[in-house]
Amino acid sequence: MKKKIISLSLGLLMVLVCGVPLTGWGQGTTAPLSFGTASVGSSNYIITVGMANILTKNGGINVTAEAVGGADANVRALRDKKIDMAMLNSDSVTNAFQGTEQFAKAGKLGLRILVQGQERYNYIIFRKASGIKTPADLRGKKFIGRRRALGDIEKVTTAMLNAYNVPKDSVRILETAETNEALEALKTGAVDGACLPGGQRASNLMDLANNADVFFNSFPDDKLDLMLKEIGIPFLKGAVPPGTYKGQTEPIQTTMLLLGVSVRPDFQEETAYKVTKTLMESQKELAAVHNVGKEWTMGNTLKKPPAPFHPGAIKYFKEKGVWTPVLDQAQQELLKMGP
Image (cartoon, rainbow, N blue to C red; front, side, top):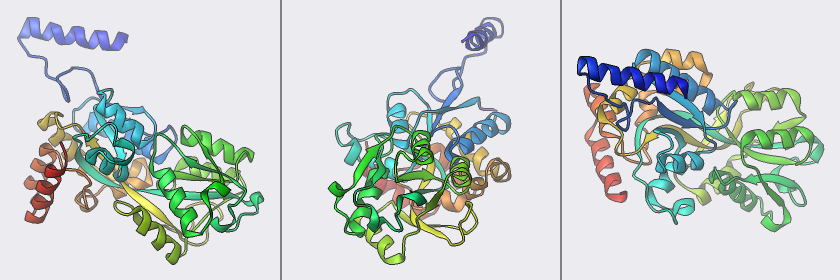
């Protein structure tokens, strides 16, 4: 608080002495931009902190990362103007922008995308002592498969049970508030399994694999196809390479979403341009922050956007010569769908 007061005082002094106007980065304020993200320790959190540092250092934009929770919680924080930017998965963006599913009651939210990139997996993890070999063995077991702040957890859990013909009421499905709570339950044996979000080599999941007797479930193609048919777009088929986690000798096949940086439509255009430009031109630094940083590419950014791009981002894409008639058509169609 003291730091904020000092910053404001210096700004006012510039106005009085030099006649320099106060200009905000995002919403007409001198305060740092607040960048909402997932739980501390997750790959999402680590890469968001890295992005905030890169934007501050390379882009001249004062940004601070804030651990809000799951993507749905970040959507609500963005809607309520508690944060300026948010790290969101493509499922939450789709539903918030269209006002469907978990956001049906709240209605459509005019989200705009700056960049996309990171692959975020839905890991299915079982304790070896549970006796579970595949999801078909979940009857009578305790499984963490619900989280208010992350609606895709329950979607994937339900689709998994349906794919294996396991009645939902035969499994004790538990809810946690955030990932660290679920990790602790797995470590202590309070549950038999869980559906957890994460990127490749997520530090909290690596810690779990290194210090608890668990294994990561890999879905065969037929089961994964059934799940994807049920949950639909924007879910994709993902494969985590062998050797990513302790004891993992084969790829982990599971569902995945793309992560992206989203803002409200009233986010300042010039700032949106600077954020997009800085992140797209700092890939080596992002990769140095975390292995998933290499996934924040122009190719992934332009891949199947679940909401319209911000005009500031489009300005940068046009400058780089990558904005095509196909992308423009998709943009116009998306604009018709949302507020």
